[in-house]
Image 1 (spheres, rainbow, N blue to C red):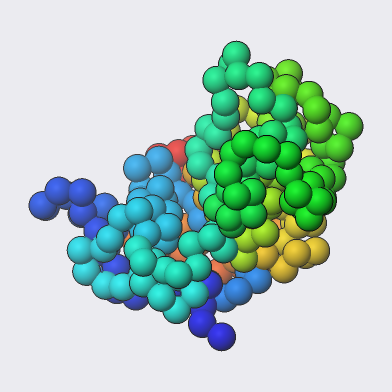
Image 2 (tube, helix red, strand yellow):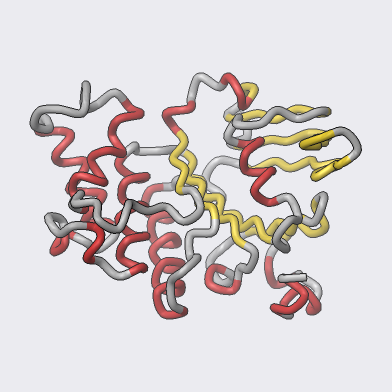
Length: 242
C-alpha cells in the first residue's frame, strides 16, 4: 500500500533565491494522525499546498497515494479545511446546507439544486451527528459559537468520506475549551473512521496527547517523532512563535 503522503528531497521557493523549504523528505502512512507544527513563516502552509498539489516543488517529488500530488486521481479522497474557514457573517446557510456542500466533490449531489437523495441525506446527517451538531442541523451557521462553526466545517469535510483529512490552523479564533474539545473530536474521528489526519498549526498543545507523530517545520523538518520525545525547548510557546 503506498503512503498517503510522501515527499522526497523537496525544495520550494516562491521566487529565485528565496527558499521556503529545503531537503524535505516525509512519508505518512494511511491511518496516521500527524501534527505539523512550527513558527509562522516556517513553511507549514507551503508544505500543505505542496501536499494538496496546489504548488509544485522546484526539486524533489510529492506523492499522494502513490501518484504525483498535482495530478492525483484520488483528489476526491482528500478533504481540506483551510485557515479561517467560514461564511460571510450575514450568510443564511444552515449547518445542514453547509455540510451537504461537502458532497459536491464526490459527484453525489449531481448539482446544487434539488432535494438530496436518500443516501446523500443519510451521509450528511451522519456527518452532522459525528460532530455533535444534530440539534443544530437547521440553525444558520452564523448563529453558532466559534467552536461549533469549526465542527460544522469538519462535518462538511467528513461528508466527502475522505481518506485524508487536512486541517490548517483549525483552532484559530476559538477558546481553549473549544480547542480541547475539537482535539478530542478529531481523535475520536481518527479512531472510528481510520482516516489519515494532518493537523497543521503553529502550536500543538491541544492535540499533543492524541497525535501519534509530530513534525516540526522551520525551513525544513527539524523534528519528526512522538511528541513525548520532543526537546523541552519546543514546548515553550515563546519559542514556537519565534
